Picture 1: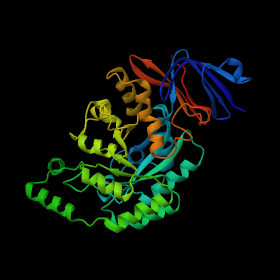
Picture 2: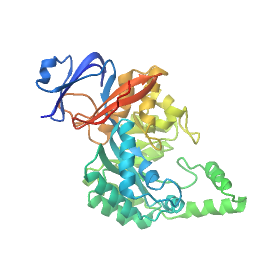
Picture 3: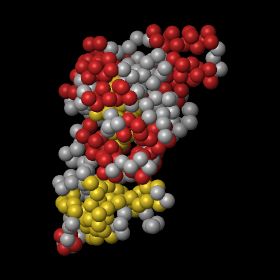
Length: 387
């Protein structure tokens, strides 16, 4: 039996911080949190945290990092098992213990840009295979379905049928709505050397593309819900869009474009997720919702990494140290709330008795958080010797 007592730690629990507390872990499970006497560990091992923070492992429900790791440069394909192993180590060092690798499907524009030799089916298959083998952290798949990917509809259903999908999101990158405002898309085309006539033609072509919508989209969402797969919308920009997504059966609103939409989605009971990179950088790349302000207004309750895995932990401590947010509330954005949104909160997401022992030891160096240890399933999967 693998038993650990972590003592002399500032333990972050959902409703506060226990100073100079202890966590008792036995056989991969948290047995006690708080003032645990050392003899409770019986013949187990003791770790003196020396005043460091002990917090739940981060749960990242949306990161595009896997596709970027497989194709780090246009046309430069890395063997998928290599990409998986190396990315997992990076994620672990960032404090992520459960990750939903966000893999797009039907997004022909992204596929054309990457010029990868791998088919989307091959990427899904190899990532799923690697996730089932010996791993450092818990790996799941978030299928991002582009509604213009009409030809990928049956493939999406088949991937869900085979058990490849742990979270489904519905995306629409058509210019003129969501985050792809026409002005933003025109700047993108202008940077590619397109003239005014070419830009107008391309935008009109994109807008005219057929979409998976109506009864067919409803059938896809229903198919997911029948298999207990949570469903997210993406880039909601109006209250009408939120209403439409809620009517479909969506559970999560990812990256709302403005404060009004985020507040409306929250009032209707949806989990609302925003990008941690937005918090870390101090604003949106495309001039949309400022996530720090949205979190302060309590209309965004989940942080995900989007395109930069290290952003979550840094954003948590930035919200606490620079914006005065209670540390436990900031940590909940990255742990308990995402766990709740995807139905994992019974087993993980907080340091509570009976939950899986997925946790971090975090030190502050020059006011920056540094992960010194990572425990997954009660076993240390990362340890550093530096103080």
